[in-house]
Length: 391
Image 1: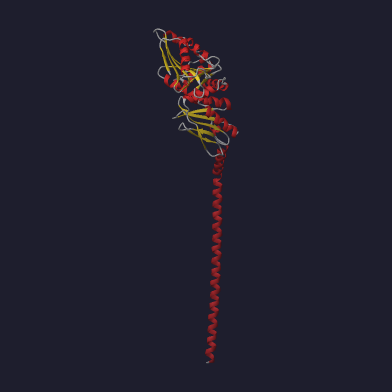
Image 2: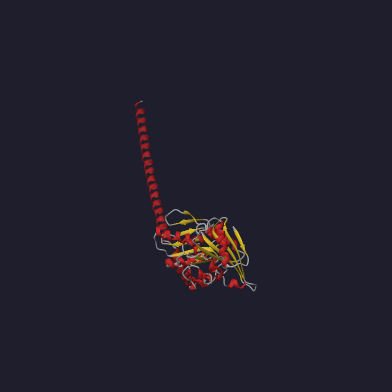
């Protein structure tokens, strides 16, 4: 059911919601919270769709606020939607003129009582979400640094104005990456000497991942660029070899651990509704995100050389042993060559001595044969003479 209200008020919208629920046959509310979406006219359709999809897991009242400040007359137009595949309730609000400067006056009466409020800015969000008039209403304030042009500067401002309850989709996108890397060190505990994060240029999630690794491991973390999409690789350098998680296509990653066969891991890039659903599951302050933001500020003040991993930290023990063996083999090559030459000469002398001995034996045999032949000849002649005398 869709109800259009032009030039309306918050009380009329609340009454329209009550009538719509009764007409749908479910006067009781089974919603767990209110999602306030602050968006512009161009992207409100996608934002409302993502909020409704997330509502299938967390039925909520979705209030989409389109702010149109200007010199025109103040006014409020609304579109109420209940049923028709919507798990909760959805209200599209268009605030005109001076009313757009005080949106909290319209939103506050429409919030569900005694339930958490989540404020989401799909287009990036303010520098300090907790100081925004609508952000003050939320228990959880969700921004998206990837939607801003200067994500690094935006993150620096948010780190300075951070308040418990602030979060960002750039951080939410890292949940599977952080889980896999932490599990790798749990299963194969070893010393990490350095780390590396590779991603598309200007990716805010890569900046957060590098800061998180540096904060948790206390090692230099180097960032490199690739064609994307998003983060394409994360590597932890250890004495036994690198622990790597590579995802070149944005869907399936390869998980590599020293001494183990490579394993494929499902690591697809998640949709906006999946990210929002994850944020709705956890409404308590994210202390790790706060610590990572602080580390990001420290990294921005560090010199470029301090954020690079040295060749010594990259090299594993196995590689060092291989190179040492190669150097030893190179150093021993002249000695081995000389020994080989000496052996060849000794073999040649032995062969010559054998040939000489064989030659002497042959000469001796010939001499004996000649003497034997001479004796036989002399014996024949003597016998011939005796025969002749008798005759």
